[in-house]
Amino acid sequence: MLLDIRNLTKSYTGAEHPAPVFTNISLQLAAGETLALTGESGSGKSTLLHLIGALDQFESGEILLDGVALSTLDDTGRAALRRGPVALVFQQFNLIPSLTVAQNLSFHARIGGRADPDWIATLTNRLGLTDLVARYPEQLSGGQQQRVAIGRALALRPALLLADEPTGNLDEATGDAVLDLMLSLVADTGAALLLVTHSQRVASRLDRRAHLSAGRIA
Image 1: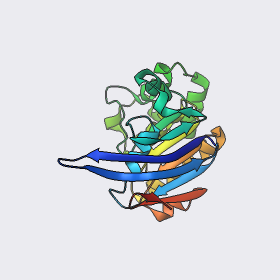
Image 2: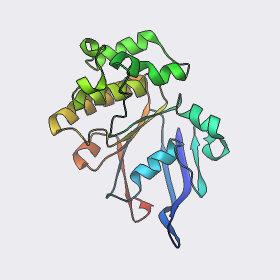
Image 3: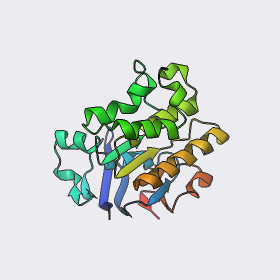
Image 4: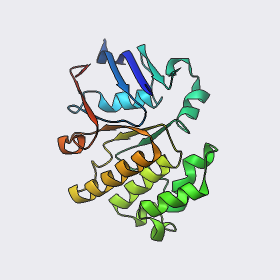
């Protein structure tokens, strides 16, 4: 298994008592597999994605990525994880406004020492961004910005792509086009994909589904 989540527990500290998000959940994802994670708002889907991406910490259990236990990583190791084996795409695009499309596309790969100009050029072409490389994020539509965000993540050639509602801010037609591109590129690179979505229609496009509800995965 590329991703192996074992008996994971996460709580948020409230004013009086810790509020459990989920308790003793387990989930596996094989290399090259795509999985949709569904659930109601507040069920902990994004929290789980953040834990897998080493953006937050859990109380007990374990997350293993390609056999490496995330609990053993220090801050440097957690940052290195997000510059290579794991890449993230968010609903809010999170592009750097002062950088052009070309600079945004190569940013994470460059700081992670994984920049490959030929691969970035391929991504630019596949994502339909060739004529937009000199523009800044504010000069792009929502769909174009999300394509840049996907390209920036895949420029790392990650083993695992984590996507949190990547089409949530887009209209249906644009969202479908963005999802098509993401799934095609993920298939070509051999990356695994864990995608959080509220949409059953989007979820149906992936290999498997898991549903998070009342702190449990079904």
